[in-house]
Image (tube, rainbow, N blue to C red; front, side):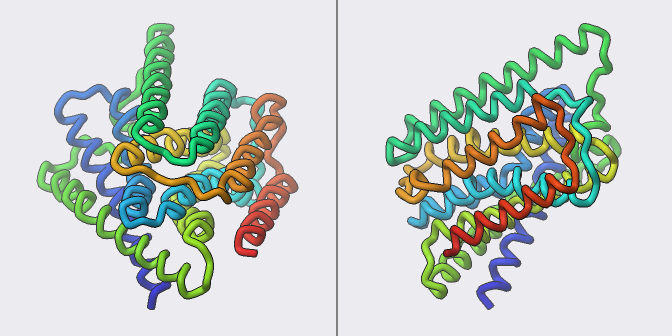
Length: 315
């Protein structure tokens, strides 16, 4: 029954997060907020809402291992699993991708996160630092996009924004918002409680459950997006999805959660898991800078590396 409740909580979270994005995006566009701003802020934060609610709920419930494990485990899964599995399905050629800047920013965010973790607790000071860096990155992205538009490149249209539907009725927009706002805390509460019970039943720590069960579950939307991009030969979308998600996990989720309540860092994170996350991030360097293709062989290597990591955590 507890596994069923965990699956139910995850399902509610993912559906509620999608509903919140659709509702918030369409409200913002109706109110005249530019599509570019909506894409850089509302969509980005909305798609991270399930992870945010899990981390906040877990921290408030006294299980910081799930709060941090959700983020650290998701970032590792995003690279090894979310890029590995699609690469097995379809080769992803990176020769036309230019993700260098965003990749370097992701590495910087990872190093900053690890440095703050060595303080022992993610408190309000850590939260302010993380959110300030996130704000600077968003501002830089906005400047770059405006510069491209002035150079004559196509402007971002409303139809290109995730979840946008210019013809959506107001009652439907409000329904999406209500479903998102009600479903997110409900799903997070179900998943955190179930994850904690699973940890107790199997005699493992909350950190282990956060790094495995919860992390994999919250990475499923990224996996679906990346598989779809790989099949359409849109490697830039696949890489951008993973890099952007990892930056938001580190800066936004823990940044906001630590402002709400302090999150203690399990020493196990400092011994292994943070370094595995950093190593996985560094493993992307040849594909970003040297333009190596993400072939099926590399997909198998990445996927097996993730399986090995999960087994080491469970062991």
